[in-house]
Image (cartoon, rainbow, N blue to C red; front, side):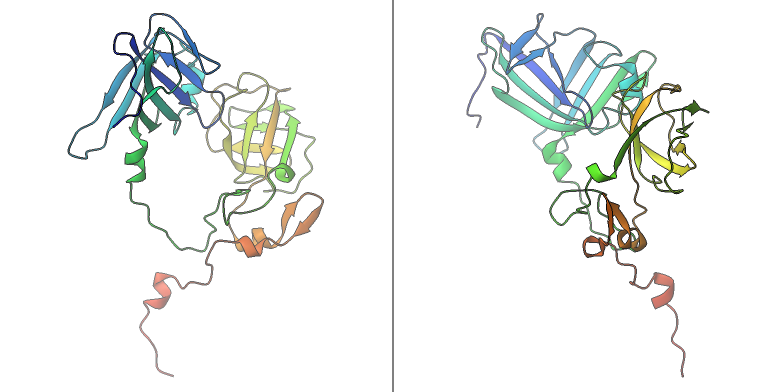
Length: 282
């Protein structure tokens, strides 16, 4: 049973979207903008909260939003670059007469993949309780499963700041291949790392994984939404190939040290082809 219920006479719905990267977006279905909790919830301008569905048979609940790209802070570039994939969303009800943020919580959820249809976007997701109900099994393999520079309990432990560099592009080949001729790091230093732009048309969009790095040339698996141009500034995080060798000589600021104690892989577990072989007599 809810501890607080919004006044039914003035009841309105509000939606708060928190992307994995970037600033939150605040929306309301009230005809006018509402200010609460130090945030301005924008009125229904170019978007439609298509609702929250739930059943009494424990089927997964769904959350859906549709709208026109470019309205209410949801830009075409942000949707196209995947900025809202995996974003958290919070739906609550309140009174438009005396709005209070999160007054009557309706549902909290996680968005799935956002899609573009011409100049319209569609985002669907599931509630947090359904996301937690997903079965996730632990796997064992030679590669380390930890997030590089993760600070969670028993995480990687390597300093993110010490492994982050900044620079400016000197030339551009395509939306996924560009060069900073001033970089002097060894080849593959940033392989499997990430890069994001802090100026230019791609500023504010999500970071992309680096496919290869050599001689200052950076290649990403996916192209950036806009074509970068020479002079764009960027922030880049060194990569980790998840191998034991990477932990044995991991750069962490001004010194090289071993991070093997935090390595989470199991390189000595025999593969299926090894332990399934028929034994041979001596």
